[in-house]
Length: 227
Length: 216
Image (cartoon, rainbow over the protein chains, first blue to last red):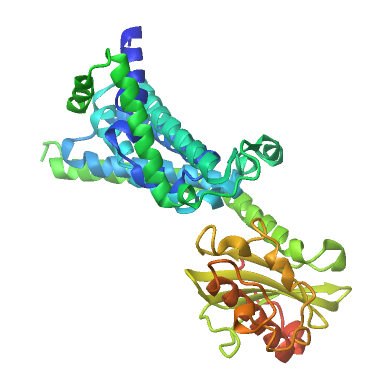
């Protein structure tokens, strides 16, 4: 794997084919848990880890997997990885585990993970696959964090609420009150706010992409063709 | 007979092996984390109990000294009620009851109600609920002080007409835009006190239930 490939995989996963903003996979957890930055970050990290381990395992086994059994094999691998992560979180990040609840086991159903296993890991050697898992997970995680921050900021005027569930008691010190005496904006905290927030993020990403490719409107189209 | 196994058989075996590997991995991780998960659950439960029951006011093992009850005249919910008994040198001090209000706006509201030996409320906390954020969730201690309004209340203060939200002629505040949620909580706390009054003696006497050891 040379540097060019390396960069290619990284920008593909994290930017050009960003799971949350371009491919639009895994929207259920994306929309459901992002009411705070910390929740978004936690689910993002769990998904990132799942993607890396599942990509690595699928890639390592790819020589053995006949096409007709590859999907059940992927599901078995992904489900095992997610359950391990679930158990570990339950044991070591108990409060966070309770906050995220059902969305940790539901990582199994995130299409992005089986998508990467099928589209990338089953065709590439372990190292690029690991990197692809990392890049895709990173893109997803960043999207979750941005959406979480946006909703928390508009919804309750703070950032890093609940950091103690991730970092232990000193996390209380991290909570930043950006807008004091914020009256609370319910719309941002409820599911509709997630859709509005996601729409804004997608628009922002598209505008940025258009700017990179010399500002022409047509620049938005090729992206769609590549996926 | 010296040919390789049928492809279907080969695939089946391979899938079986992957499943076996996954199961072994899970069994291993489960064995490693099981104790710690139980400990975490215990710690959290004890934290919740101690929020309404000061540590200094009892000296028995609260989590172990518990019974499961079911009484449909007082609790209109199929779930059993868990009762933790607090004692000081074997003398009854208070009970902490995990009760469920079935008539919330959006499903069950699980409450922890601590009642001392005289029948007065030591404190109430919401353990879990699915009420609308921003409207029904001031019942949480993190959102407002409303739930503290139960402290020191008993069946005599207020009388049974007072055990209702203000809109229904009672003593307890409702929230702007949400009457159903506080109404359900008030009613359930009231029923818990009524149950306690009727069963006070037997509550402390019955032997600790050993069922569901893993659940706290």
